[in-house]
Image (cartoon, rainbow, N blue to C red; front, side, top):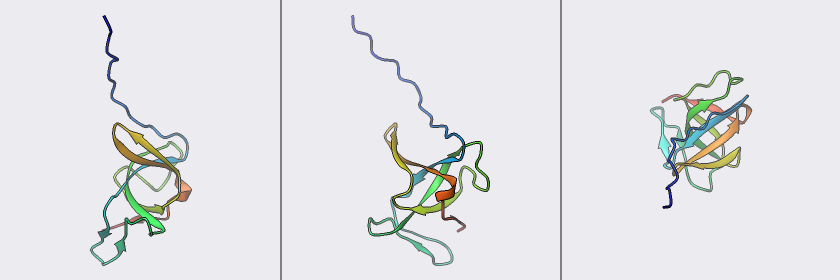
Length: 96
C-alpha cells in the first residue's frame, strides 16, 4: 500500500533583516492620486508585508510598501507568489 505524503501548512518566517511581501498584481491609486503601476515596464512595485525578521525596524506585517521590481528573491509558497527581500531594499511605506 502506498501512503500519501502528509500535507503540512507551510509558513515562511524571515530571519534577521529579511521581509516577506505579497506583491500586488494590479495598478493601484492612493487616495491622494499617487498611481503605483504593476506593469512589467515599471521600475517599482507595491505589495503587502506578510512577515518580518527579528532585526527589521519601522515595517510591520500589514504595511503596504514600495520596492524595486528586481529586488529580492521570488518565492512560490502554497500557490502564492511572494518576494523575500532585505529591509534596506524597501523604498517607502504607502499610506492611502
